[in-house]
Amino acid sequence: MKQFFQNIFGLFFLISFCAHSQQKAINIPKDTSFTVKNEYKKYLKYFPQITPAKDELPENVNENRNLVYTTLKNTPYGDRDLHLDVFSPKKKGKYPALIMVHGGGWRAGDKALQVPMAQKLAAKGIVTICVEYQLLQEAQYPEAVFNIKSAVRWVRSNADKYGINSDKIAISGCSAGGQLALLVGLTNGVEAKEGNQGNLGFSSDIQAIVDLDGVVDFMAPLSLNLKRGPDSPDVQWLGGTFYEKPEIWKDASPIFWANEKSCPILFVNSGFPRFHAGQDELIGMMKDWGIYTEVHKFDIQLHTFWLFNPWINSTVDYINNFLIKVFDKQLAKK
Image (cartoon, rainbow, N blue to C red; front, side, top):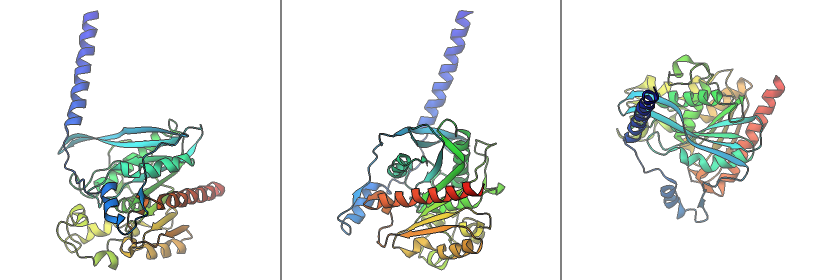
């Protein structure tokens, strides 16, 4: 009997090892062009004072990196784990949470780009979660939306473990991540945008949104009139040009999902107007509905300001103060 159980255990270990090895062997095409190093090289000659923000864990923050939040089955690359990083205050309590979505034109970048901001926000009393999602080499729209909605549900399913107040979950995004954050946050309760990628049974609702230089409306003139080739990332991600796929371009535009029940939004902008296409129109709609919005602008021709000193600290302060203001108001209404 002892030998029997040893054999069973050995078989289980072998199966687990093989499954892990298969996951590790997945070779998904990657665009590695969007990195802090490359952005630094691009902007240094115009802004010689900048320095890249660093991955430095504050003393009062715990970290849990590369946690699997869902496993996608039978993708073209096999079973595919998606990961996230959690940064949480060491002091016990129930804190607001912020899901953080990286940029990179839907085809590049990774969750590590969000880590310096996430660490600084966690030090101020917010549980921050940097999420991985499928880029366009692997999957077109709307799979990234389904990924992130699953991550939100994972956060709620693990709220007690990480000291999260599940009634106070916000989402932020930078550039392409800002468009995704807006879309995820403005489609609360929309069944067609939920997907079935795991952590079902928990809500994916968002209570506040932070958009850092992310387009609000693909069909706004400043966005639609950009010169694009067939290899443009938005064309590839949306499966065709606006003239080929107008219904998808509209579906992926967050502004068309806004309504009188939408949650508050913070916009933090660079000096490039094209990244704010549709923002003024959305703010006007929100004002009509009595929903709070807040806007801050760095009047600089530097799109990825959140990656660098001196702007990262101001960005973190804007986000932190906004979330405190919004969540306190929401709590007061209850």
